[in-house]
Length: 404
Ligand SMILES: Cc1cc2nc3c(=O)[nH]c(=O)nc-3n(C[C@H](O)[C@H](O)[C@H](O)COP(=O)(O)OP(=O)(O)OC[C@H]3O[C@@H](n4cnc5c(N)ncnc54)[C@H](O)[C@@H]3O)c2cc1C
Image 1 (cartoon, rainbow, N blue to C red):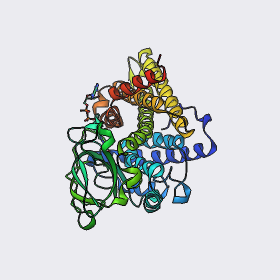
Image 2: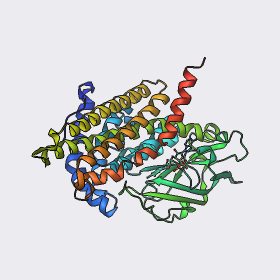
Image 3: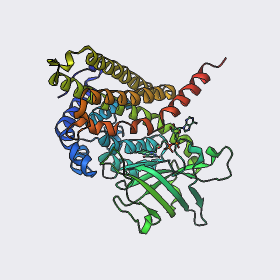
Image 4: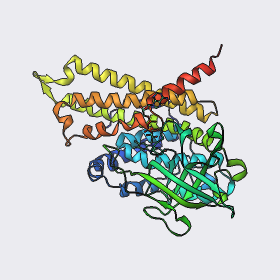
């Protein structure tokens, strides 16, 4: 059941058509099957295959490279609908989207020609790797290294952590320390485009030296794998430095932070999507369940919960779309992307918890969808920068913009 609460009148015809198509896909293919894949913690291959057919891996990739050439705003609307179905499905495309953004903005023509057409169809999927066992928020503290060898190739060594799509991806955009002496450290970091064999735990031949340990066991966000990556003497040719050696060495931190800005809009859209689903479930259950002789929806305390959920959700949706539109218009949107990520991820969690409470004891049962949402929602508070980090970004940007 889809409950219409969103102001879709603001959408263009293309946005409305594609949103409706993805919403139907979520209703028919994702929601009915999510419980099975969540329970098994298995990769939802049939759903992903259908997403390839729908072109969802190439939404923002330009048409000349085989994609749809749509903007971030439209992409955010699609992500909202996919996440309304199951956030793990949006996780399958999220790092891929960030990888294609990096290529489109910073890649050499050769890199674009080589990767983007295969990425647009989903033939290969991309992962994005900053985090390490000892480093998440403080990206400048990464330890993994890249050292240039006599033959011109770069040798990559070190351990990466929490790589979404770490096993199934065919290419990983990875941040490495290429100049350990650089001060400040971010000036000595480079992004490498590391190819690998999808679904192979131990890579061989050209990709030897990149191993994928068993996937990390998680409370939620199942189905899409999160893994460590071990680079141990992996040889990366110089033409696989993002943007080419001349333009790219030492630019990795700046490139990755730029990509995180669009990534934050994307996580915000996921918060709106999961919150929307939680609201729908609450609206339905509260009209079905009776206490004290009437549906619980007739109790004012429950109506207040529904009202707060819908109101916060609408605000989160609007700020998410504003951040996306500003980015599409070429405006600075770091502040707005941070606000959108903070508000929408917290709103998603809030709506899920309120919906869970409305479900009473049944919310605690695996028979009900809200139980899965309750395990999935907290991820959004962490990934792509925690709420604390968003507040730091917002505070810093505010002071920069309003310096006296
Ligand atoms: C399921 C999942 C998927 C992920 N996917 C990816 C991926 O694909 N690629 C990738 O690179 N990473 C990924 N991550 C990692 C994620 O980005 C990090 O977990 C996140 O950035 C937080 O880093 P951390 O876990 O090291 O926490 P820490 O940085 O250790 O932070 C711990 C706590 O301290 C707080 N904190 C830290 N610094 C400050 C400060 N200065 N002031 C106030 N509070 C502070 C944080 O907000 C947090 O509450 C994923 C994580 C998860 C759980």
